[in-house]
Image 1 (cartoon, rainbow, N blue to C red):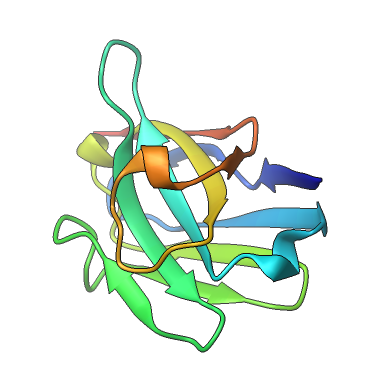
Image 2: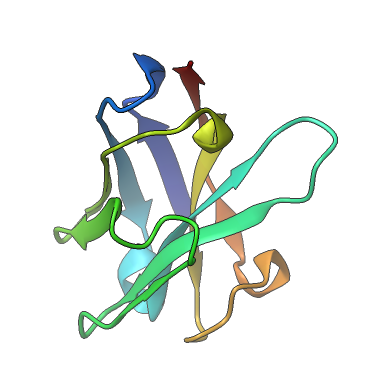
Length: 120
C-alpha cells in the first residue's frame, strides 16, 4: 500500500536547474531504498540515483556531481543542476526492499512520473 506522486518537472534550458519531489503515503517507510529512474519513449527505464533509510546514496555516473538526492519522512527529492538535453525524460520515483540495485525490477512500487525537458 504505497502511493508515490512525483512533481516538479518542466521545461528548462541547458545548464539550468530543476527540483523534483516525490510524495509518499502508505507503507513507504517499510522499504529500505527510495530512488529515481528516468525513461524516454522506446528506451529502457534508466537508474538515476537511490538513497537508503540510513542515508547511503548510489548515483549513476551520468548524473554524479550534478544531481543530488535527499529525503524527508514522507517525501523524496531530486535536485538537478547543470541540466543537459540528454537528461530529457520522464522521471519516476520508486521504492525497493533491497539496496545497491540499479535494476527497475527490484523496485516494487512506482509513481506516475513527471516530465523533464531540457532544451539546447
